[in-house]
View (cartoon, rainbow, N blue to C red):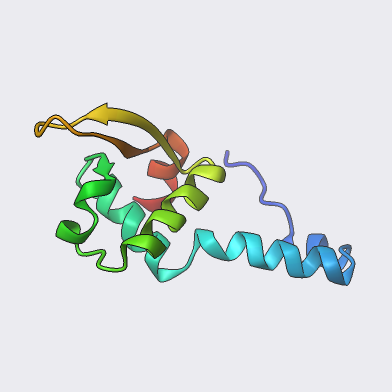
Length: 105
């Protein structure tokens, strides 16, 4: 039997104004279009995403995409490590965590 989801309305009603605004700001990253596109790109291809491949995978605003990847990592959707690429360069590579795969597949 699946776990009962917490009642978000109740949770948010208990927050003061500052906490509610911070909660909405912080959790917005999990469901916006760029996050979905990044996560789907990584999970459906089951392929880690090197920073150097952002534009070739359709993410032309690379700075925004990099910031989003780090935000998704902060919430446990992605992990990253430094990896040497075929061209000899070392760059950060993002991979989906188990939770990230469950959430975006």
